[in-house]
Amino acid sequence: MKYYLIAGEASGDLHGSNLLKGLYKEDPSCKARFWGGPLMDAAAKEAEGVSCLVRDYKEGAVMGFSSILKNAPKLLGNLRSCKEDILAWKPDAIILIDYPGFNFRIAEWAHKKGFKVFYYIAPKVWASREGRIKKLKKYVDRLFIVFPFEKEYFSKKGVDFIYEGNPIIDAIDDSPLISESSESFMERTGIEDCRYIALLAGSRRGEVSSMMPPLADFVDRMHALPEYSDYKFIIAGAPSRSKEDYSTLLSGREDFVKIVFSETYAVVKHASAAVINSGTASLEAAIIGTPQVVCYSSSTLSFLIARQIIRSTYISLGNLILQRQAFKEFIQYYATGENILVEIRRILEDSSYREAMLSDYAEIRSALGGKGASERVASAMVKELQ
Image (cartoon, rainbow, N blue to C red; front, side, top):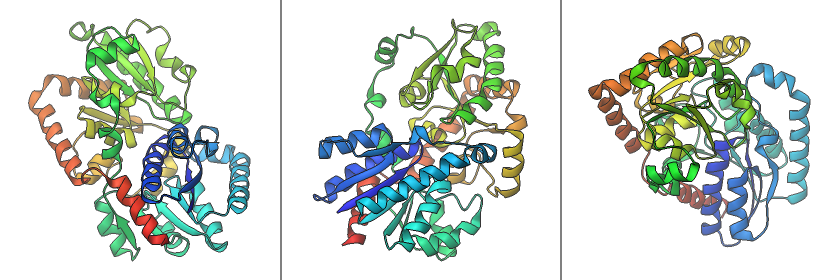
Protein backbone atom coordinates (compact mmCIF):
# COMPACT_ATOMS: atom_id res chain seq x y z
CA MET A 1 0.00 0.00 0.00
CA LYS A 2 0.99 3.61 -0.51
CA TYR A 3 1.40 5.98 2.44
CA TYR A 4 1.74 9.76 2.24
CA LEU A 5 3.17 11.24 5.44
CA ILE A 6 3.36 14.91 6.44
CA ALA A 7 5.65 16.11 9.25
CA GLY A 8 6.48 19.77 9.73
CA GLU A 9 9.28 19.90 12.30
CA ALA A 10 12.24 18.02 13.77
CA SER A 11 10.25 15.95 16.27
CA GLY A 12 7.81 14.93 13.54
CA ASP A 13 10.72 13.87 11.34
CA LEU A 14 12.09 11.72 14.17
CA HIS A 15 8.82 9.97 14.98
CA GLY A 16 7.91 9.77 11.32
CA SER A 17 11.15 7.91 10.59
CA ASN A 18 10.42 5.31 13.25
CA LEU A 19 6.84 4.96 12.03
CA LEU A 20 8.13 4.40 8.50
CA LYS A 21 10.41 1.63 9.72
CA GLY A 22 7.37 0.03 11.31
CA LEU A 23 5.28 0.39 8.16
CA TYR A 24 7.99 -1.20 6.01
CA LYS A 25 8.15 -4.10 8.47
CA GLU A 26 4.40 -4.61 8.85
CA ASP A 27 3.51 -4.06 5.18
CA PRO A 28 5.93 -5.67 2.69
CA SER A 29 4.22 -3.79 -0.15
CA CYS A 30 4.75 -0.41 1.57
CA LYS A 31 5.59 2.55 -0.63
CA ALA A 32 6.06 5.95 0.97
CA ARG A 33 6.14 9.58 -0.05
CA PHE A 34 6.36 12.41 2.43
CA TRP A 35 7.01 15.92 3.63
CA GLY A 36 9.52 15.53 6.44
CA GLY A 37 13.25 15.59 6.95
CA PRO A 38 16.53 13.69 6.73
CA LEU A 39 15.59 10.98 9.23
CA MET A 40 12.45 10.01 7.34
CA ASP A 41 14.40 10.17 4.09
CA ALA A 42 17.09 7.85 5.47
CA ALA A 43 14.46 5.31 6.58
CA ALA A 44 12.85 5.33 3.14
CA LYS A 45 16.15 5.08 1.29
CA GLU A 46 17.13 2.06 3.35
CA ALA A 47 13.86 0.31 2.52
CA GLU A 48 13.17 1.48 -1.02
CA GLY A 49 16.61 2.44 -2.25
CA VAL A 50 15.53 5.91 -3.37
CA SER A 51 14.63 9.23 -1.79
CA CYS A 52 10.91 9.65 -1.12
CA LEU A 53 11.19 13.17 0.34
CA VAL A 54 8.99 15.74 -1.38
CA ARG A 55 9.70 18.77 0.82
CA ASP A 56 12.07 19.27 3.77
CA TYR A 57 10.34 20.67 6.85
CA LYS A 58 13.14 23.24 7.24
CA GLU A 59 11.77 25.07 4.22
CA GLY A 60 8.42 25.82 5.79
CA ALA A 61 8.62 25.79 9.60
CA VAL A 62 7.24 28.92 11.24
CA MET A 63 6.42 29.77 14.84
CA GLY A 64 4.06 32.22 16.51
CA PHE A 65 1.02 34.10 15.31
CA SER A 66 2.95 37.07 13.91
CA SER A 67 5.25 34.72 11.98
CA ILE A 68 2.27 32.85 10.52
CA LEU A 69 0.75 36.11 9.27
CA LYS A 70 4.06 37.20 7.79
CA ASN A 71 4.56 33.88 5.98
CA ALA A 72 0.94 33.38 4.90
CA PRO A 73 1.64 33.45 1.13
CA LYS A 74 4.39 30.85 1.51
CA LEU A 75 2.18 28.60 3.64
CA LEU A 76 -0.67 28.82 1.17
CA GLY A 77 1.73 27.93 -1.62
CA ASN A 78 2.94 24.90 0.34
CA LEU A 79 -0.64 23.75 0.89
CA ARG A 80 -1.42 24.03 -2.80
CA SER A 81 1.75 22.14 -3.74
CA CYS A 82 1.05 19.38 -1.21
CA LYS A 83 -2.51 18.84 -2.43
CA GLU A 84 -1.36 18.63 -6.04
CA ASP A 85 1.29 16.06 -5.14
CA ILE A 86 -1.19 13.92 -3.19
CA LEU A 87 -3.65 13.94 -6.08
CA ALA A 88 -0.94 12.91 -8.52
CA TRP A 89 0.38 10.08 -6.31
CA LYS A 90 -3.00 8.72 -5.09
CA PRO A 91 -1.98 7.17 -1.72
CA ASP A 92 -4.03 4.56 0.13
CA ALA A 93 -3.66 6.59 3.32
CA ILE A 94 -2.48 10.03 4.36
CA ILE A 95 -0.70 10.07 7.73
CA LEU A 96 -0.57 13.50 9.38
CA ILE A 97 2.08 13.85 12.11
CA ASP A 98 1.36 16.63 14.63
CA TYR A 99 1.90 20.08 12.93
CA PRO A 100 -1.81 21.04 13.23
CA GLY A 101 -1.78 24.44 11.53
CA PHE A 102 -0.89 22.83 8.22
CA ASN A 103 -2.22 19.32 8.72
CA PHE A 104 -5.77 20.25 9.69
CA ARG A 105 -6.15 21.98 6.34
CA ILE A 106 -4.85 18.89 4.56
CA ALA A 107 -7.17 16.66 6.62
CA GLU A 108 -10.28 18.59 5.63
CA TRP A 109 -9.31 18.67 1.97
CA ALA A 110 -8.22 14.99 1.89
CA HIS A 111 -11.45 13.81 3.56
CA LYS A 112 -13.53 15.63 0.98
CA LYS A 113 -11.45 14.03 -1.77
CA GLY A 114 -12.13 10.56 -0.36
CA PHE A 115 -8.68 9.74 1.03
CA LYS A 116 -8.24 7.72 4.21
CA VAL A 117 -6.82 10.10 6.85
CA PHE A 118 -4.82 9.03 9.92
CA TYR A 119 -3.62 11.57 12.48
CA TYR A 120 -0.53 10.45 14.41
CA ILE A 121 0.45 12.39 17.56
CA ALA A 122 -2.77 14.21 18.29
CA PRO A 123 -2.98 18.00 18.11
CA LYS A 124 -2.86 19.40 21.65
CA VAL A 125 -6.53 20.35 21.74
CA TRP A 126 -6.53 19.63 25.48
CA ALA A 127 -4.25 22.67 25.89
CA SER A 128 -5.82 25.12 23.45
CA ARG A 129 -8.26 25.50 20.56
CA GLU A 130 -10.56 22.74 21.76
CA GLY A 131 -12.93 23.58 18.92
CA ARG A 132 -10.64 21.59 16.64
CA ILE A 133 -12.12 18.41 18.11
CA LYS A 134 -15.03 18.85 15.71
CA LYS A 135 -12.56 18.66 12.83
CA LEU A 136 -10.90 15.57 14.27
CA LYS A 137 -14.29 13.84 14.39
CA LYS A 138 -15.32 15.01 10.94
CA TYR A 139 -12.16 14.75 8.86
CA VAL A 140 -9.93 12.12 10.52
CA ASP A 141 -10.65 8.41 10.09
CA ARG A 142 -8.46 7.33 13.00
CA LEU A 143 -6.56 9.27 15.65
CA PHE A 144 -3.38 7.82 17.17
CA ILE A 145 -2.52 9.38 20.53
CA VAL A 146 0.80 9.16 22.38
CA PHE A 147 0.19 10.41 25.94
CA PRO A 148 -1.59 8.45 28.67
CA PHE A 149 -3.54 11.47 29.94
CA GLU A 150 -5.07 11.86 26.47
CA LYS A 151 -7.03 8.59 26.80
CA GLU A 152 -9.49 9.94 29.33
CA TYR A 153 -9.69 13.31 27.59
CA PHE A 154 -10.57 12.01 24.13
CA SER A 155 -12.90 9.36 25.55
CA LYS A 156 -14.93 12.08 27.25
CA LYS A 157 -15.00 14.06 24.00
CA GLY A 158 -16.27 11.09 22.02
CA VAL A 159 -13.24 10.82 19.75
CA ASP A 160 -12.21 7.32 18.67
CA PHE A 161 -8.48 6.73 19.11
CA ILE A 162 -5.76 4.12 19.30
CA TYR A 163 -3.08 4.30 22.01
CA GLU A 164 0.02 2.13 21.73
CA GLY A 165 2.45 4.03 23.96
CA ASN A 166 4.85 6.84 23.12
CA PRO A 167 7.46 6.52 20.35
CA ILE A 168 9.94 8.72 22.22
CA ILE A 169 11.06 5.66 24.19
CA ASP A 170 12.09 3.93 20.95
CA ALA A 171 13.79 7.04 19.60
CA ILE A 172 15.95 7.47 22.68
CA ASP A 173 16.72 3.86 23.59
CA ASP A 174 17.63 2.95 20.01
CA SER A 175 19.93 5.94 19.51
CA PRO A 176 23.66 5.08 19.44
CA LEU A 177 24.32 8.44 21.10
CA ILE A 178 22.75 7.17 24.32
CA SER A 179 25.21 4.29 24.72
CA GLU A 180 28.28 6.44 23.94
CA SER A 181 30.61 7.25 26.84
CA SER A 182 31.25 10.82 27.96
CA GLU A 183 34.91 10.50 27.02
CA SER A 184 34.04 9.36 23.51
CA PHE A 185 31.52 12.17 23.06
CA MET A 186 34.02 14.82 24.18
CA GLU A 187 36.77 13.45 21.95
CA ARG A 188 34.54 13.04 18.91
CA THR A 189 33.11 16.56 19.11
CA GLY A 190 36.41 18.24 20.00
CA ILE A 191 35.16 19.46 23.37
CA GLU A 192 37.58 19.37 26.27
CA ASP A 193 36.65 17.05 29.12
CA CYS A 194 34.60 19.27 31.41
CA ARG A 195 31.46 19.74 33.47
CA TYR A 196 28.85 21.62 31.50
CA ILE A 197 25.28 22.86 31.31
CA ALA A 198 23.30 21.95 28.19
CA LEU A 199 21.39 24.77 26.51
CA LEU A 200 18.45 23.89 24.23
CA ALA A 201 16.82 26.96 22.73
CA GLY A 202 14.30 25.23 20.45
CA SER A 203 14.27 24.27 16.78
CA ARG A 204 12.44 27.16 15.12
CA ARG A 205 14.10 30.48 14.38
CA GLY A 206 11.60 32.43 16.46
CA GLU A 207 12.12 30.19 19.49
CA VAL A 208 15.88 30.45 19.27
CA SER A 209 15.82 34.23 18.85
CA SER A 210 13.55 34.71 21.87
CA MET A 211 15.67 32.48 24.09
CA MET A 212 19.05 34.04 23.29
CA PRO A 213 18.86 37.06 25.68
CA PRO A 214 17.85 35.16 28.85
CA LEU A 215 20.32 32.35 28.10
CA ALA A 216 23.14 34.82 27.53
CA ASP A 217 22.33 36.53 30.82
CA PHE A 218 22.26 33.21 32.66
CA VAL A 219 25.59 32.10 31.17
CA ASP A 220 27.30 35.36 32.13
CA ARG A 221 25.96 35.21 35.68
CA MET A 222 27.00 31.61 36.26
CA HIS A 223 30.41 31.96 34.65
CA ALA A 224 31.14 34.96 36.89
CA LEU A 225 30.72 32.85 40.04
CA PRO A 226 34.11 31.54 41.24
CA GLU A 227 32.71 28.14 42.21
CA TYR A 228 31.33 27.64 38.70
CA SER A 229 34.01 29.35 36.61
CA ASP A 230 35.24 25.98 35.33
CA TYR A 231 31.83 25.00 33.97
CA LYS A 232 31.22 25.17 30.22
CA PHE A 233 27.95 25.67 28.37
CA ILE A 234 27.12 23.56 25.33
CA ILE A 235 24.36 24.58 22.94
CA ALA A 236 22.52 21.68 21.35
CA GLY A 237 22.15 23.21 17.90
CA ALA A 238 18.97 22.22 16.09
CA PRO A 239 19.55 20.56 12.69
CA SER A 240 17.34 23.16 11.00
CA ARG A 241 19.37 26.11 12.35
CA SER A 242 22.79 27.58 11.57
CA LYS A 243 25.55 28.90 13.81
CA GLU A 244 24.43 32.45 13.03
CA ASP A 245 21.11 31.80 14.77
CA TYR A 246 23.03 31.43 18.04
CA SER A 247 25.47 34.31 17.49
CA THR A 248 23.99 36.38 20.34
CA LEU A 249 25.03 33.69 22.81
CA LEU A 250 28.30 32.67 21.16
CA SER A 251 29.80 36.10 20.49
CA GLY A 252 32.45 37.03 23.03
CA ARG A 253 31.97 33.78 24.97
CA GLU A 254 33.90 31.39 22.76
CA ASP A 255 36.11 30.21 25.65
CA PHE A 256 33.23 28.77 27.66
CA VAL A 257 30.25 28.45 25.28
CA LYS A 258 30.37 25.80 22.54
CA ILE A 259 27.84 24.55 20.03
CA VAL A 260 27.25 21.01 18.74
CA PHE A 261 24.68 20.43 16.00
CA SER A 262 22.33 17.46 15.55
CA GLU A 263 23.50 15.65 18.70
CA THR A 264 20.82 16.67 21.19
CA TYR A 265 20.64 13.30 22.96
CA ALA A 266 24.39 13.20 23.57
CA VAL A 267 24.60 16.83 24.66
CA VAL A 268 21.77 16.31 27.14
CA LYS A 269 22.96 12.93 28.44
CA HIS A 270 26.43 14.06 29.49
CA ALA A 271 25.36 17.43 30.95
CA SER A 272 25.23 18.16 34.67
CA ALA A 273 21.90 19.91 34.05
CA ALA A 274 19.98 21.44 31.17
CA VAL A 275 18.10 24.65 30.36
CA ILE A 276 15.45 23.73 27.81
CA ASN A 277 12.92 25.57 25.72
CA SER A 278 9.52 23.96 26.26
CA GLY A 279 8.78 21.21 23.79
CA THR A 280 9.66 17.64 22.96
CA ALA A 281 13.25 18.18 24.13
CA SER A 282 12.01 18.62 27.70
CA LEU A 283 10.36 15.20 27.66
CA GLU A 284 13.47 13.72 26.05
CA ALA A 285 15.61 15.08 28.88
CA ALA A 286 13.29 13.44 31.39
CA ILE A 287 13.61 10.08 29.61
CA ILE A 288 17.40 10.44 29.33
CA GLY A 289 17.62 11.43 33.00
CA THR A 290 19.20 14.89 33.01
CA PRO A 291 17.83 17.39 35.55
CA GLN A 292 16.38 20.45 33.88
CA VAL A 293 14.65 23.78 34.07
CA VAL A 294 12.21 24.70 31.29
CA CYS A 295 11.95 28.21 29.87
CA TYR A 296 9.66 29.65 27.25
CA SER A 297 9.74 33.11 25.74
CA SER A 298 8.09 34.49 22.61
CA SER A 299 7.12 37.80 21.05
CA THR A 300 4.78 39.92 23.14
CA LEU A 301 1.99 39.53 20.59
CA SER A 302 2.30 35.74 20.46
CA PHE A 303 2.42 35.52 24.25
CA LEU A 304 -0.65 37.70 24.78
CA ILE A 305 -2.68 35.70 22.27
CA ALA A 306 -1.47 32.35 23.65
CA ARG A 307 -2.35 33.38 27.19
CA GLN A 308 -5.97 33.81 26.12
CA ILE A 309 -6.34 30.39 24.51
CA ILE A 310 -4.03 27.97 26.38
CA ARG A 311 -5.87 26.15 29.16
CA SER A 312 -3.35 23.62 30.51
CA THR A 313 -1.72 24.09 33.90
CA TYR A 314 1.77 23.24 32.62
CA ILE A 315 3.59 23.79 29.34
CA SER A 316 5.96 20.81 29.67
CA LEU A 317 4.85 17.34 28.66
CA GLY A 318 6.58 15.66 31.60
CA ASN A 319 4.71 17.83 34.10
CA LEU A 320 1.47 17.28 32.21
CA ILE A 321 1.91 13.51 32.34
CA LEU A 322 2.35 13.59 36.12
CA GLN A 323 -0.17 16.40 36.60
CA ARG A 324 2.28 18.00 39.01
CA GLN A 325 5.56 19.89 38.78
CA ALA A 326 8.52 17.57 38.39
CA PHE A 327 10.72 20.48 37.28
CA LYS A 328 10.41 24.25 37.19
CA GLU A 329 8.88 26.18 34.29
CA PHE A 330 9.73 29.85 33.71
CA ILE A 331 7.41 31.46 31.18
CA GLN A 332 7.89 34.75 29.32
CA TYR A 333 8.74 37.51 31.84
CA TYR A 334 9.91 34.94 34.40
CA ALA A 335 12.36 33.39 31.93
CA THR A 336 15.26 35.52 33.14
CA GLY A 337 18.93 34.78 33.59
CA GLU A 338 18.64 35.32 37.33
CA ASN A 339 15.75 32.85 37.75
CA ILE A 340 17.48 30.26 35.60
CA LEU A 341 20.67 30.57 37.64
CA VAL A 342 18.87 30.12 40.96
CA GLU A 343 17.20 26.93 39.70
CA ILE A 344 20.33 25.46 38.11
CA ARG A 345 22.28 26.07 41.32
CA ARG A 346 19.60 24.29 43.31
CA ILE A 347 19.77 21.31 40.95
CA LEU A 348 23.55 21.14 41.32
CA GLU A 349 23.81 21.89 45.03
CA ASP A 350 20.74 20.26 46.59
CA SER A 351 21.13 16.47 46.22
CA SER A 352 17.69 15.67 47.67
CA TYR A 353 16.05 18.08 45.23
CA ARG A 354 17.92 16.50 42.33
CA GLU A 355 17.04 12.96 43.41
CA ALA A 356 13.35 13.86 43.76
CA MET A 357 13.38 15.11 40.16
CA LEU A 358 15.02 11.91 38.94
CA SER A 359 12.43 9.87 40.82
CA ASP A 360 9.69 11.78 39.01
CA TYR A 361 11.50 11.07 35.74
CA ALA A 362 11.21 7.33 36.39
CA GLU A 363 7.47 7.75 36.89
CA ILE A 364 7.18 9.69 33.63
CA ARG A 365 9.00 6.98 31.70
CA SER A 366 6.83 4.25 33.21
CA ALA A 367 3.65 6.12 32.24
CA LEU A 368 4.73 6.24 28.60
CA GLY A 369 4.81 2.46 28.20
CA GLY A 370 7.60 0.24 26.96
CA LYS A 371 9.49 0.00 23.72
CA GLY A 372 7.93 -0.86 20.38
CA ALA A 373 5.28 1.86 20.18
CA SER A 374 6.22 2.82 16.61
CA GLU A 375 5.83 -0.73 15.34
CA ARG A 376 2.56 -1.20 17.22
CA VAL A 377 1.14 1.98 15.67
CA ALA A 378 2.30 0.91 12.21
CA SER A 379 0.64 -2.48 12.68
CA ALA A 380 -2.60 -0.83 13.77
CA MET A 381 -2.55 1.43 10.69
CA VAL A 382 -2.05 -1.51 8.36
CA LYS A 383 -4.94 -3.36 10.01
CA GLU A 384 -7.17 -0.30 9.66
CA LEU A 385 -6.52 -0.26 5.91
CA GLN A 386 -6.99 -4.01 5.53
